Image (cartoon, rainbow, N blue to C red):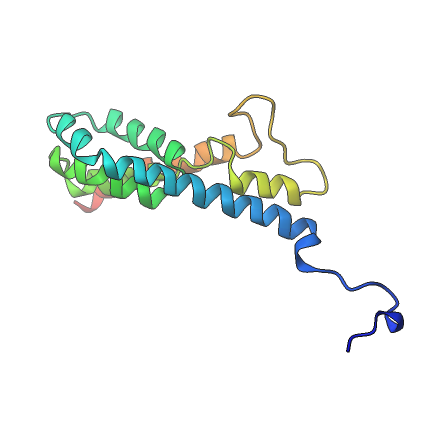
Length: 160
């Protein structure tokens, strides 16, 4: 039998720590939102695939991919939802590959990852502002995502 009298401090349980609580909030936020949006787009995929069949503007399609990624909160679910429509629209493989970094727009709307990082930050330098899209991850995320897509377009132009 376990005797608490010989312990200098009471034993800690896993679920009472701030790290566990912050991590659990992040996991629920990420998986819940991704599951919900993936279910929505799976139900309506025939409609939007047929609606965009003759759409031929890769920059606007890239913007659509980026916005959907911010809403779905999952790069993989965004690619599964929109890239078949891109193939049906007749975009070349190089264009679709160059647009692939735009599926990483999940940093736009603060969710599990950002909330978890703000909760872990003890210095107070990582913040989420009072507006929806003014947080510490906005500028680095935009620069990385857009420069990656531009680099992929340039690389596709050189290799193909």
